[in-house]
Length: 462
Ligand SMILES: NCCCC[C@H](NC(=O)[C@@H](N)CCCCN)C(=O)O
Image (tube, rainbow, N blue to C red; front, top):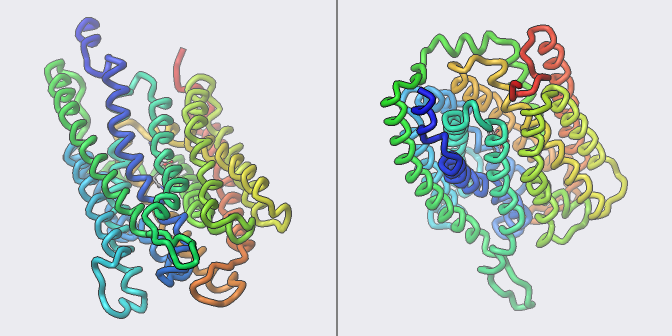
């Protein structure tokens, strides 16, 4: 038996890390498109005459279908029923279709006269594209989590999850740093010598990258089929089929709800913040619009190294609940300092962004690998899908809320087509999410003591 196990495909380091590289690259491409519009916000306002509300509606579209049409929950069920190959490829195709629609809407290749439901038709078309893409990238995220468990169970699971997140964040970082230079590269030189960036150009780049990411996943499906055949030959334990009863078992678990709540509160204060961070740099810290994306780009840059580092630490030393509490505290401090009217200097914003990067490494590196400690393994797919679903309420609602708050209470000039906002109130709102996240993290630690989930124990058993 031992001899047989040694021959399994995932026993080869090269094979399992190679698999991780392939699927993590697909996620990198997905995260690139997710955040590509953030640095373009001031240009959307200047060139396409969007306002913050339009931008907020567009950004919130990411979660429309996931939340209201329960696509994530169906995605989880499809994943459990049809397997990673079918679900992953379908997710890649949805990402490509969604991105293509978004590109065509922004580039003006598809136009509808007037408004739709009182909203600019361009905003609605781009938002529908983004909503389709949101279904694809979220289902891809659950699928990739399942693939990582499949290949790394009993091996470097938390490190692999940390590295996958780090690679995906590279996509966010590219979105923050490459988008504007790329848009300028294809921009038009104006009579006064200034360059008017080409807004659709970075979206086209994303489309090409998503196609490459889909090809990467397609290659993975062949490896996965071989691995399945090998597992069948070896009569290895097969995955349990999905049962509707599993959903009820998961939602009856208090620990699950605490993790899901922590997830939605914490992520609501990070990803939606990133959508406005470039604009914050321009408005509060007076950074030049063409360079402003560089500062938020530091956040994913820090997480590249720190997420695997903290994941490895959790694997070996434990203290998962404490790590989440420290991360939530740092989040509060950063957003509160962004809100206060002091040190309106680019270097201070840079410092805060780096600290936020540490917080954004601490919580995810401990939270995601904690799910299997709270939820039995056979319900894990359903649990991750449900956590993502709860989280998507925040990813959908908070950008729209912030857009509305900016438009209604924070305009400094009252003119459409300019981007002068006072970000104090939005930053207090983000601080509030941090405070709520800290409260839930403390409850989680208490629940861990009561129920003995082992969140403070190392993942690797000696
Ligand atoms: N093994 C779980 C990995 C989850 C990583 C996590 N992703 C999400 O939470 C997604 N639902 C949302 C991604 C939004 C991308 N801007 C993460 O930390 O990225």
